[in-house]
Length: 206
Image (cartoon, rainbow, N blue to C red; front, top):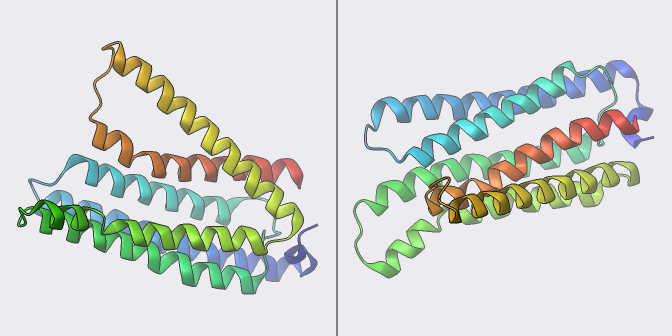
């Protein structure tokens, strides 16, 4: 049984509601940014809007799962959860800011070397978010690590298979997806599939 399940059900439910509020706040913020972008930037890239809406939907889904799942036991200790949120949430906010800054600067810079650096501005923020996820998995208890690693394996396998199938369809001329959009959506799809897989596996093991 996870260490956090040793606490009372009331305390565990309160911690879960707190986590749900964090994710819900982040998802709502991203949704507002996406809506504002759609209204204020008529020439915005479609992939940017899709990315913002996708991340917002993912965070709101996690918040709903945290808030309404019947099992009151949380999956990590309170200290680990607080550290994870301190590391993950600023990275996601920084990622959104970096994406907007990158899009804005790319319209004003012509030098190829500078454009490459500007285009990569969002990458460090995502690297920090991934670091927070890895640290959370590494420091969780044995059962939680098993759930997380199985969920990562399922997500990586599913998205890789879908990407491969799409590549064959693209080669056959059945679909025509811009390469930039396809590559940008890989990471959000892995995160979304990971979240769904984790929910299913958590119900299986508990």
